Image 1 (spheres, rainbow, N blue to C red):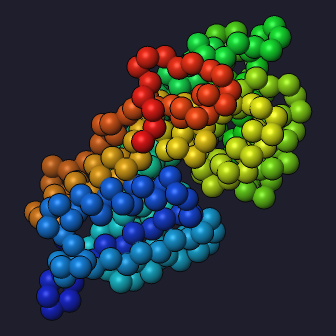
Image 2: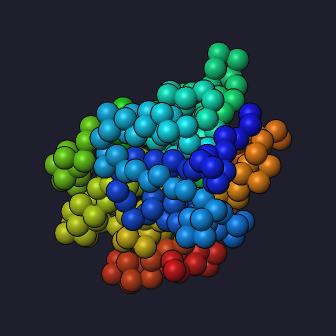
Length: 307
């Protein structure tokens, strides 16, 4: 797959699609462009052109954004997070797509009947294995108020990876004698009501799983949980800085940086030969010291304070 040069100057054009506005997700975009800059591709220096669009959580808008990138014949499309990746794959088979903050193609249900990912999909994905480590941290740190430990979570039933992670957590909870109460949520508008309903059911902990609605509505969730004195554990390291207690998960900035390194290689060689999507290579165990103090909970030694 060869690279299109654009304009008389031959400057590559990147179409970057964010599905929604979110401080955590944005770290991936920063990492992506930092990696390109370190490799000599910098809009300020005139060696790169960037068309940036944010769908603000609107799927039809996201589709329009991708179609616009295709009409502009951009050199590559950068997608963040999974909703952008899925939309891009559905709308172009030719322009290379570099994903970040997205699960594996299998989890996104975009592989073909032979189990192969789209041939124009590159960048960095993640399995759900790390969720086990994050979830099983809970019984090591929290003692139940009465009887069995009860964990509450919400999940977006229209998002494949969210349903998949909920199923995984449900099996994990059953195997470890943890009572799991989970409720579906359809949009950010429902989050406050659904979270309040969960909190009324005497849970010990709220678990924030990898879900776009959870990312977008995290401040609403935090506020509700803090009022009821319920700590939040998560598998997303980026949410710890925003008030969750602890996480084991990918560093979002590094995730974007890794995808940017791969995109830079493509821009240098003007060819995708030898490139393929790869697994995220940096995960970390972090906790929020002020939140651990607030709840009087001590963390295992291998967890580090969030930066």
